[in-house]
Image 1 (cartoon, rainbow, N blue to C red):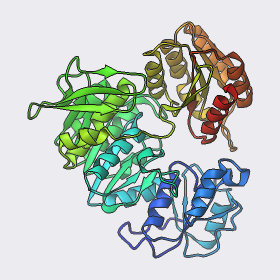
Image 2 (image 1 turned 180 degrees about the vertical axis):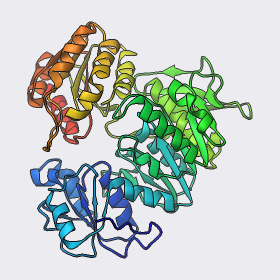
Image 3 (image 1 turned 60 degrees about the horizontal axis):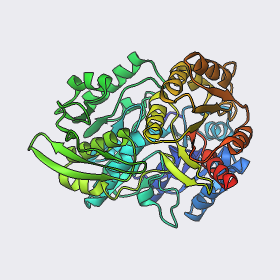
Length: 476
């Protein structure tokens, strides 16, 4: 299974089959292919297990044919299999595809082929904030009438409709393609952007040396580089950027920045004056998202859109209508007793820190429930995560962990959440581990007090949103 279809070839020439079609990286690609007229089917372990049934019902309603993950959907040699690089060779779809000699593409292979075939590819890179900036950037370009195709790893609320409740993709002009690009598997090296945006560089799935190399190469491959001047590691790589455009909330060297003293922050929204140093103009920005990190994300999107030809004033105006993303500081609701539940994707040190700082900027105790997104990532960045929770939360706050996400496989499970609790305590924080998520829910409902904020944090598990809604309902 080594054949690689010509990215400029007719995508409708062969039927496509997605193994793991409900995944955050797979679902939008399947939607883009189908939107361009391709025949698309798929399977998913979560579909077989009855997890997030509303998502799979929506996929079926949109015309995707779903199969059990038993190989039965692979039945023709003309099919193309799309499967994550992490999918084991023992999975029935992979076994059957080998038997029939089907070409196999990873998610990154397919996305890079679609991206590189576009006349203007705008790529969003960095260890944190990619999905939010991709959503902002896509909305700006849409608002400007450019009709972009958008590939995102999160549901973009501006594009949600009754028939597309899980809008993580927008099918638009094939020659303008906006996508987040992933460094965790090294696939960022496959992209040749017209505009490459670098948000930040911090520890996640790879070592810092590997990240510096990957992101430096990414900027060199981009016809134009947009770089965050506030992030020390990212700014060090600006020398690799072609025709660089810099942005920053605090760094006065940045071409696009914020007028000092103009930031007005609230618990759910904020406002500021955007300064364009190149022509000495100022633009009033209103953002319906809290947190200084989202102000930085907004500047990144404005700069990226400007590099793609949208005037700064138009980009700023568009962001006033940006509704945000699902699971990115997504306020689920407040109970009658005054406990607010927030659903959030924070799963690495930088994302978690941004969420916790946003919460701590306003009064109230924080109960931070954290579900690690795997044993491997927990081993890689557990020490930094523990330090983050201990540093960002106060003596009245509590971090609550359950066991890491595990959907099967051969990963080493010897180091779990108990180690993180011990490390948080060593750094002076307050934490506890209850192995099951249900047990954590029981504890939160029993111990939450009026004025508390419960943050449900984690990745790789769509049922966390169900868990957050259930906690809120039980509090009511």
